[in-house]
Length: 299
Image (tube, rainbow, N blue to C red):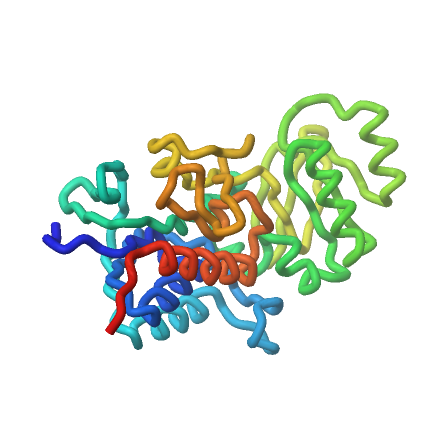
């Protein structure tokens, strides 16, 4: 552990974390980014709603650009997973089980982990756009496809209704064996959505997803959106007593500070719209707030 504490430790090197790092480095702050290499952005085959990329950009390419920008200001990056965060007088101590870092303040950009359906080769399907994780991000690219939404029946119906903006052929597939009652059937009919029971199995065949049902029926889908939820990576802050919303995301104030003074949270781990542009905005707000709260670093 360094004898001189960091001004700020940033946990996570997705778009949010790397933007915060760039801001703080330009504020001439002593920082470190700790990253486990699991940014959700890596799943993106091509984003077409990311500002500044009119022809789209792959998630890994975008992350590489964010890293390059941070590296231009000599931002140090530790490739590790922070497993413990504790509070003490003067700041916080973070540990990966072997090493320790002391920091006056912490910015958590730890994101979420999507719950994925049990499909062999699901990672390849995401890369090919057969399985998509964010309708707000890329439903435009799935327009006019036969689209399936897999999730708890009511949730799947709500998401399927949103997707009716982009296709006339949208199906809601239940993710459990609960009966599809008449009220759900009426809601589906009113929204122009086909309601299906839980599939017995999902296969990837010829660039499509094939759903198999207990009664022998099969349904071919050009695109599948799983809406099975995601697990917010909020444990570090929760261990300090930070307030969480009902889904486990961190609740923050207008400066992106959690209920634990000195701990800020940005990006998907925060209760907000999970978008790259939103995460970048979070980062700018949090980094500026951290800089202003730290002791002055005059030349």
